[in-house]
Length: 426
Image: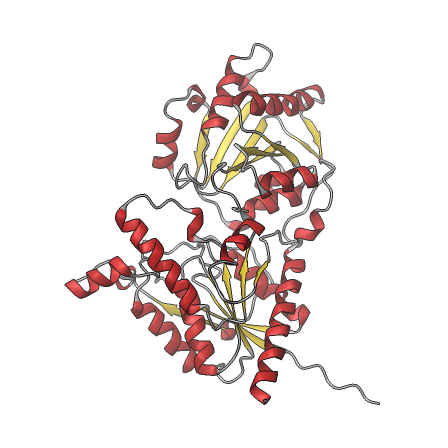
C-alpha cells in the first residue's frame, strides 16, 4: 500500500514582537517558529513593529537562522503615539484606565486582525498560537480563531499575579485584567505557562486545560566549551532590572562588599558587568554599596553576542526574589547550556532553586555570607588554576532545549486541531 503523502499543517503565531526587533516577547515565538517545521507545522507570523526612528524600536534581536521567510511574516507598523500613549478625550482616557490590555491600543488590535484577514494566508491556517507578554496578542488570537473557525492556544509567558498591585488603580486594573483573561481564553483549546507555580494559579482562573512549556535554550546557538581561560574573574548579568519585586540585587551587592573587605581576595581581579540593565534604576539600587566602584553597567548588545558573553564568563548571575515564585527567565536556561557556574540571588524558595539543585549547575543563596562564600570558592579555583576554569558537570539540561519545548507545543497543537476537527464533523 502506497503511504499517504505528508501534509504540513499551518500555525499562525501571534506575538507582540519578532526578530529583528527586540522586545520581551520576541524570543519565545521566534525559536518556536524555527523548530515548528520539524514537527509538522508550517509557521506564519503576525506581529507588530515600530518605524525606523521611533523611540520604541529596538533592532537587536539578531543572530537567528531558520526563521520563516519574509512572505510568511505579516508585520503591522504602528507609531508609538498610536499605541494609546496620547489620549485626546475623556472616553479614551477612561478606556486606558480600565483597559485590560495594559495600555495597548484598540487601534493596534483591530489593525492586526484586519491585516491578517486580508492576507493570502487567511484561508490556510489550521491553528493559532498567541503569546503574551501583553494580553493584546491573546485578544487578537481569540478574535481570529472565532473568525476563521480554528483552535487557538494561549501562551502566558508572564502572569499579572507575579507583580505587585499596591495602588487602588493597580488593583482595579489587576482584577479587570483577570476577568478579561478569563473571558478571552474561555474558548481556547489550551493555555500554556512557563512554570508549575503559574500553572497552579491559572488552573483556578481559566477554563481550558493548562500545561507547562518552559523557556529554554536554542541548542544551535548555545553550547559549552570544556574550559575557559581569562585574565579577569568575570561575573555577568544579562538583562533588565525593572524593580526589586522581581529582581533584587541587594544581597549580591552586600556579598561583593564582603569580598572587598576580605584580606585573601584581590578585588582587582574582578570584573562585574550588568549587560543591558537600565542605568538610572541600577545606579539608584547600587548607590549605598561600596562595590559601586568596580561594578559596571554595559549597554544592551545584539542577541548574537549573548552566547559569547555568557560562555566566557567565570560566573553568570540570576536575580530573583523570594516572593516571586514561578519566574523562570530565558537567561537561566541559556546559562545552563554554556555550563558556567550559575549564581542565583537571593533564591526564590521554589522552582528556580529546585532546578539549580537538580541540574547541579550552580548555587542559590539568600544571605550575603552564603553568596560571598560561593563566589570566593569559584574565585579560589580560578586563581589556583591560573585563570582556567573547567565547564561544570551539570546534569539533565538537555530537557530544556527549545527544540524539545517546540515538540511539546506541536503535540498540543496536533491534539487541538484533531479535537476541533471532530467537533466540526459532528
